[in-house]
Image (tube, rainbow, N blue to C red):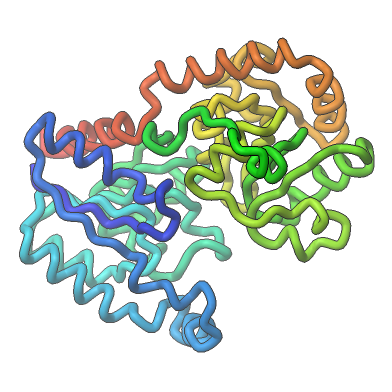
Length: 348
């Protein structure tokens, strides 16, 4: 099978999600592949004022949108793939997908890491492109009926996973690393408005708590900015989790999430996970044995207070969660195999 993978190196090494998996499957099963990296086309959106203004004026398209789509089409025409797997693809134009389909006959697959109808993370092109895909692999069950209603004929649920080369247990060794990363509670994720009350309750209920917050915009919150520690990627991500007694996991409601990437990454890194109680979390991790859960800010404070004083119990739960994830077929290679099996079923 010839596979063109569209993804991004913008969050390396956590992304691209499927590149290492595809490399492994190419060795094991003889697949040929080409990787198309979105990152070089959208880097200006991170810091350039001109790019940000143009992005809004062009209907949430980057200045390089035309070049991106031209180059993607050219890559597909050169390679002649059997499958085009696009991870999110917010800037892939419907016309580009149509031409790839018409001129190569490839099966078009979207791995939907975000909710296409969440305006904070989506684009008009992403929604308009839905009918052009042959298969939509959704990480959120809640969006599946909407994707079908928008015109995609085959929709499946494919959860997030983890990358074994990135997500594994690692603790600080050097004294300066201990100083930097040791914490009672760590959270890695953005400062969404609906997340703020949980952390306000934590710092007010446990005023001596050593809380570390990584991700965007925590430094803009007057009460929480003192806990802001920047961003954590790669080894720093592992160290932040490995040096924390408790790793919090909150879903993103605006994305209709019932689990997130951290749902698998935290246990894979060997950390004790205290997560929002959702049906998907409960489906994968037994409460009190493989993870701990909370429903409200008050319950979060109660659970943090309880588990901070119980080192042995935290360790047992962390070890059980690690076993569940790493022995349970949850890598992105496993997710890719699921997607390719669904592709084969389309033609079967």
